[in-house]
Length: 166
Image (cartoon, rainbow, N blue to C red; front, side, top):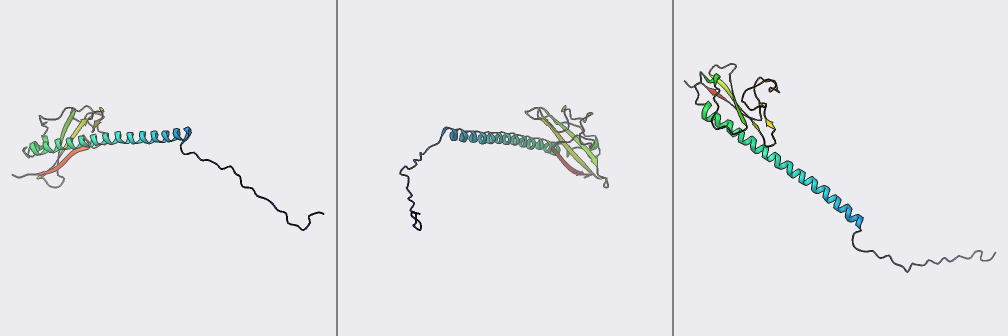
């Protein structure tokens, strides 16, 4: 046989054609990038709206807690200790769409100390009532005591103890 024992020579040829890469984006890549941007932007906008709503609610809670604190400082502390259990006077400057309730309890062991709780319920701009007083009349009506404690409850409450000073 011809060529036995001889090494075969294989020639490798490099391709003379080079690939040319174009800088830029195809229409599909651009569409995907825009879709990702729109999804991220929608998430950021909804987060911004939620933060604005929570900030408004926090401001309302602060204002209503200050209404309760003001009621406690101006009226309840100046009331007669003996008749404090029957205190039900509402201040003349309660903000609109707001109810105020006052609960007075005797201390369980000390006769000369009473606990006073001022509860403020109010309606937000979204017509959601914050607190148990759904009709905002300042009185615990049937079906309003959702936590079963026998009184109105709200996020806006101020409580203190008052001692007899006589």
